[in-house]
Image 1 (cartoon, rainbow, N blue to C red):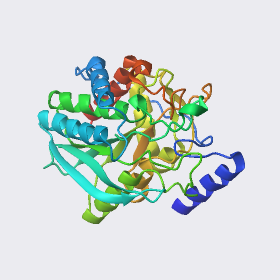
Image 2 (tube, helix red, strand yellow):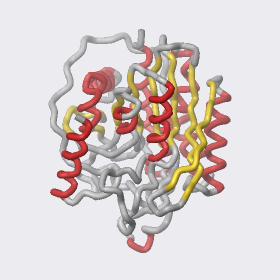
Image 3 (cartoon, helix red, strand yellow):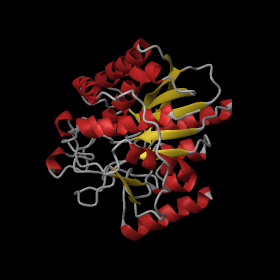
Image 4 (cartoon, rainbow, N blue to C red):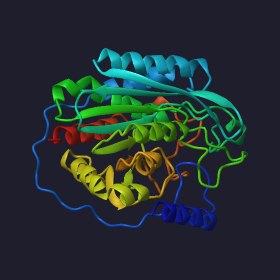
Length: 334
């Protein structure tokens, strides 16, 4: 099945001339099933706190691998999760990028109740893209992306959930995983891998280690660009192929907490992202929450891979709705 998905994606790439990570074609599928009313958690996601984390991450500068900003932000993430009482471990390994450079990949894993066998994974990447190669101003396309949305937003949501997780007290252990070297895929002027293997290097490494160690989780949720002002989350194709019951549950939960207008029950795209190795290598059914906005210049949002991906273009309300959806999901784990 995996090879068929890959072949399908490659054929579609050739057909519609799609390039790069986080771009794709319409996914097949239908509506999520309705659920009965549920008891909503009293724990409330604090959007101001999450937005403050985005500003802190961006305050270090663009977190491009190998930079001082990257090192400082990684230390901040480790320090913050530790402050909230989670067990933090790091995976550090040299990885070679599409341009032949080698960087130390730094995956950061923060575990709540690490002794519990039943686990859920919430993940996001924390690195910044080195090139704003989708910027409408061609003179800016070799500048780094600040990545307020495309990186910092997912991490900020995880940090805020971690801050409140003891109050939530879910019946499962939770692993918050910050993947490195996700967004170093070849720019428009580079030589990309036809299967997209120049992207998502950190998650590919993590997934291999997880599989080798026998790590298991009930499911995973990947957060990618969850704070954009123009965000709308449709069903992502690979997520439906591998984890459709979890897709349906997330979208129904979003509706229950008042985020139904944000989580649209419609087909989105097939996207090369960190959930691919999580599904295919670690065998954890994982859903990618990622925007698909057909009205935008770029289908992933107006600021995607541009120099405009800055905190002032973040919607705290969208952060709140995504965060509350995840808090509700975790509160229902038995």
